[in-house]
Image (tube, rainbow, N blue to C red; front, side, top):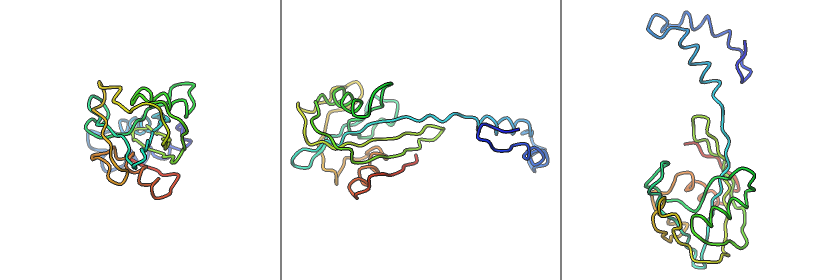
Length: 182
């Protein structure tokens, strides 16, 4: 018998029957079910985009995540998930319009981050840098975020989302790729 990962699991049956915990309430059948269910859990791969907007004085806009399910009370940059059929650049431009109300000019991909959020949730995060935009950055989603604050990349507001902080530090160190595990 094989699970979806291709590993042989039949060899585990005798070990589970005679394991020290077999006399407890956790019977080997229950352990077997837990093993099978956990090994069959699907992995979800998602893509997200992040904007590192920079003024002439080196300041970048951040905002406090206030009314969100995921990590409220942390600072973030303009970001979001890609929608079906959307390219990475299209997703970035849409998210920036929705979150801070600006139209981007030229953009540069500066960093890619693989992020393991646990429980089979994996992300590929694309970080873009821009110095060219039209409009004044504002909080266009007050039902999700607090007001925009400007800060230097080397002195980001805290607490900044940990994976964004790690990606900015890697980018500033000249790395184009990094990995982050929650």
